[in-house]
Length: 563
Image 1 (cartoon, rainbow, N blue to C red):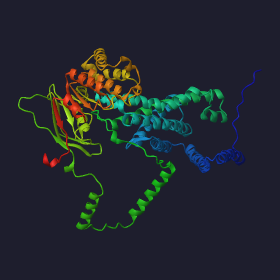
Image 2 (image 1 turned 60 degrees about the vertical axis):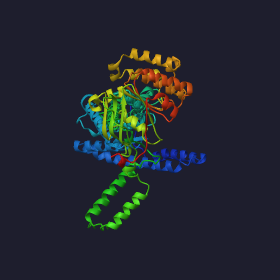
Image 3 (image 1 turned 135 degrees about the horizontal axis):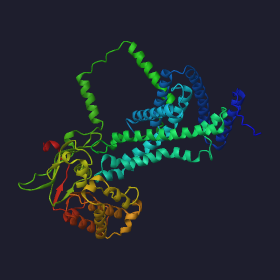
Image 4 (image 1 turned 30 degrees about the vertical axis):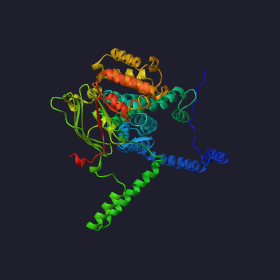
């Protein structure tokens, strides 16, 4: 007669058993001391916190499980979501001001969806809010989602606004829509954030037995039943992490890339090396702060002493002398002579104001006109705002004031994508810092919606190969990674790609700075043969004389003199 598997739940752990397990921590601490790791204090604090936090959790959950009412269970899970959002937002190196709020919304939305699926279709507890099921399951889902959010959104923000954001800026310069520009960064963020969960799923049952399955088996559940529950949990974990991460990335994109497809990298910051405050310390500090405010509100408010006019003038004088920004009238300004009667303007900027993301003026009262068939050279000292002006002409940064027109049409009437496809900004770095190969990037560019409406990918590829031949560069460079190209090769290949897109105006920001004399001559010939309007930025007086039909000096002058 076959034997029947008898599974017996383990008994309660006594103090001696816990002390025996705790002695293993002492072994680790002694090893740290012997090796000079200086982790003994951290090990002791971590072990003590483990004991205190788990005892507090067990003591807290016991009455919740016993009472088991929805107005207790649901708020407790909501509190778990708040702590999870705060902890996830504390980890990324790249952050932005609304990150914690976005994480909270994404976690709440994903957990609510998973909660509904578990309650209605999968676990079907009775009642549907059963604390003994829903609280532990929610804890497992949130724990994995924290890792996905912190890794994935950090990667997304870094690819969008950090040092790796060159591809996004290139796509925007070529006319990408908001979604098309953010897609590569979103793909990178999703892949990075979901990798730990996918790795865990690929080895589960082979080299690891997960904690839930171990706990249920120790609790007396047959192993096969425990395995089924673990399968269910892993599937729900993957869904919850994916949903929360995708929602967070969409919210981050809406904050950093506005509806007009203007990128705002100044809204993202790289976190300093200072460690984020511990969650328990932060909670205690918040409680103490509330207590102090309540105590202050109960006391009698004392009016602040009035500030005399002399004191106010003294304070203003100190602020002005402390190295703050100079007055606006000392900022850089530029104004070109207006068109003569009967002249046709291809690209025109009138009374343009360009500011940094922080509001610092970069260019003020700038007026510039590019005539049809004209090559204009823009010269001036470093820091006078030439590159900022070019990015404004390309609608890469919004104008704080002023107007832009292209063949009589305004930026608003054309839309940012169509404008950028017609007025192409060619950056000085070329392909430096871009991922992948030139072929991969050009394939992505010609697949943009605005570029497909202008030309077929095959025609663009044909013009690219022709441009490379004129620059005396082999086609094989298109298959190599950007990182393997020299500075001059990178600049020329990138320029050939931009010329192949057939814009109406090329904005060339020192595009031959890494080229020798022969390569520079080939670049100048390629731009001249393209027969488009061109604005060159160059510090080379001889080059400006060769390429330009008109040279405009960009100087730092007083705004008051122009107003």
